[in-house]
Length: 188
Image 1 (cartoon, rainbow, N blue to C red):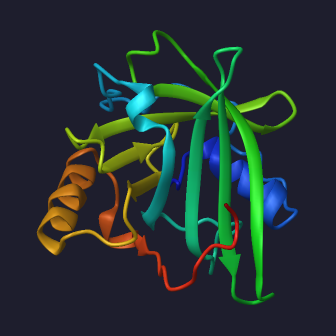
Image 2 (tube, one colour):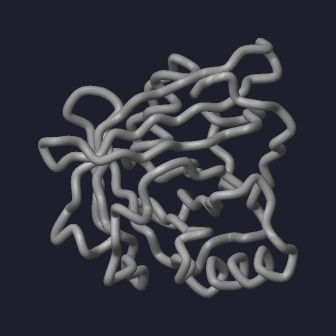
């Protein structure tokens, strides 16, 4: 994570993980007012697996644990996004595969992501660790927010600092759901 990790990701999880197609807000790709994507942004350093440490609640991800996302560059300049999570109610792993495109220069952490058809949603890296160990991602509005990290857990002091950054962007951090990561994902 968001892995996890923005509106399109949420839409993808809605469509692919639970079968519900929630399209509300998915056509928007720009960041919400007052949120600026990280620049300079180095996608080669960003690609790879991210664990979703926290998210705002949406029905299509509700109850899911062990959520992660893997980002990889493609020969056509797009980004392949693979989201996975465990659904304890069914006892199964679920996966959604999408495609992301930079909305401007690839040196700015602002992308649009689609997991189905022509529908894209905004994915904006609003804060990023200098060593690319954690990221704060916001969708096209403040109801989409993810805290991602390279590891399944993060130092509590760092966690609070990232949460404070999210709050400073107008995110309702009291509504964040902290994701459990107790299972080993069987996917490579």
